[in-house]
Amino acid sequence: MYNIHTHIAGSNKSILNIETINDVVPEFYFSIGLHPWYIEATNQTHFFNQIRKLCCYKNMLAVGECGIDRVCKVDINLQKKVFLKHIEIANKYNKPIIIHCVKAYSDFIEIIKTGINKTPWVFHGFNSNFDIAQKLIEKKCYLSFGSQLLKSSKLQDTFKKVPTEKIFLETDTYNVDIVELYCFAAKIKEISAIKLAKQIDNNFNELFLPKPSEL
Image (tube, rainbow, N blue to C red; front, side, top):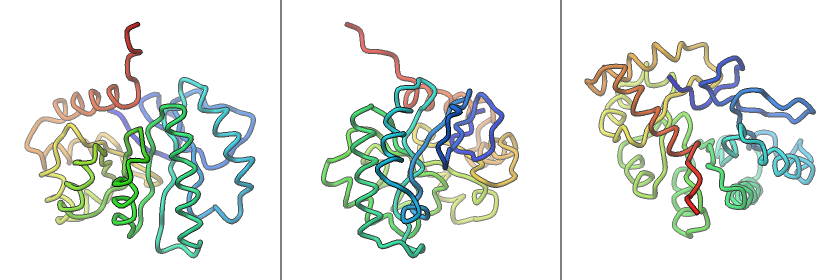
C-alpha cells in the first residue's frame, strides 16, 4: 500500500519528503523541494543546484513538496517565483511535482492554464470541494488524501466522486496507519481495500515509474 507523501522514513512503499539537503541520499523513494514556509531562510541558488543533482537518482521520484501557501507570511509573489523554478526543474528532468497548497487552488489553476507545466502535479493533503477537484483532474492532476479524510464528511463526499485513477493516499506528518487509511477510503468508495490498493499501485507505477519509451 503506497504512501505517496510522508516525513517519516522507513518504508520501501513510501515517498519520503526531504526538507533539508545533506550528503546522505535516502535508500528509499524520496522527493525534495523548497517548502513555501522556508523560502526566506534558504539559499535558493544552492538549494536548487542540489535538487538538480538529486534528480539524477532513480529513487528521487518527484520534485516537492513545494507550492503556494496564502496563510504563511512569505510574500506571495516570491512564493510563485520559487514555484515556477520548481516547474522548470521538473520539466527538465521529467519529474512529477508534489504540491503544497493552502487557500491557493485558484493560483494553481491559473498557472496550469498557461501550459507551462510539462509533467503531472499531485496535490498532497487535498482538502477542498469536488468542483475544485474536477478542475484539477481535467488538467491531468492527481489528488492525494491524508488523515483529514478520516474526519471530514465533506471531504469524504468529494473523495467518493473522484475517479480512483486519479487518487493517492498519504500520512504526511501525522501518526496515521496507512493501512487504516486505505481501509477507510475503500469503504467510502464501496470497494475492497485490496482493489483500491491495486488501483493506487497502478497509479503509482504510471506516474512515478513509467517504462522507458521503446526506441
